[in-house]
Image (cartoon, rainbow over all chains, first blue to last red; front, side, top):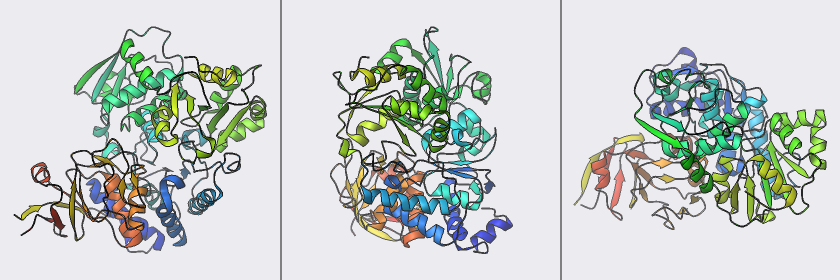
Length: 414
Length: 140
């Protein structure tokens, strides 16, 4: 492997012990990835800061790195933590667990990271340009930043991400190289009229089936409306990186490396072509719900974290209505979006209608046993995939309107 | 009879243990009790078995980027396998082991074998690995 003078300095500890520890790990990581050299990165999104995933060992690592004086070399946002920092007690999170989470938060912020606590860093100002090499962790945000922004990252394992951020470099491999970003499998949409893809939940269903069928091979989707928005693409990215191991997708005419189908495949032929019909779409949608009956305990929106416009949409659908007292309606988002909602009065309005804003975290990462949820309804394909295992509850998948109706009536009708 | 294989030492180290074998990839995240080393994934054919101190023979690791935490935590609690033998070194598992070495001074040696050698390993066989990539399987 080739080393620059600065990399050599880091390796020999001339830039501090913390940086040396990170660089030692990167050196091994470079060998694992089969890289010939390291490349500079412009920013990072760090995933190792959630206690329920990092565990005590991850906490010990972060505290050690911080105690050795390491600091990030590039702007680095933080993914979710394992509690709502202000309202963890209201979420019935055990104090011992919250304390471990707090320690991990302190360690990562003292490393110089930005306390965004969100799985949608692009909503908190971490929005790299086309072609920038970055280091992203957390699968749905990796999928989003590669595909929608055209920035370049692999799905980095936690802790490897913070080591890269501290050194400001990453081994050159995988999706950092243009040729590896080409599409492999073509998905043609067949027979969808204009009533489809108006709602982000349709993007979640499509993402779910594409992720499952493509697994880790980059899919190219042909036939989606050219006009779309970040919320739709976020729903797609979240679902496809949950049902499969997808780190990148192309939508012809929408994402920047797929202005044409030919460009998406970089002039090569697809390895496989799969037709997606209304029938496959409907079957997938049914498959995403595991619950039966009409009872619901929890309405869950904001996976990945809700944007400001999604909060506005919740308010519109709740206009003149109230959430049933025995139903919980949790909307998950990051602190930046919550602050904006608070400044416009939107937050007070949502709260008065019976909504709980769950900030900084996600129901899949903190203990919810104390709530005894049996049934959850969500408009997120990602949540539909993970929540049954993580929370033990049955899941209904539906669009946002059906979710809000369930919150208001206390009954699921989909 | 003892067989000697040449493996790629992805994370080198000396170790020995009894083989625990599956043809299925294993996701570490949420599928292992880090306190006991027991596999808790009901859909896996190794469900209920303990990997602590054994040579884990699986085609590859799989699953979320957060699997590194699980690997690291197993090393911290001394419930990790003695070694991992696979056909494909997937970064989450390999890097988890590298970080464990940096933090606790002990990683999980990880070696990749060609498919033919990999498939010849039977459950319960003794496996020892050496830093130079030699994987010895079976008794003398």
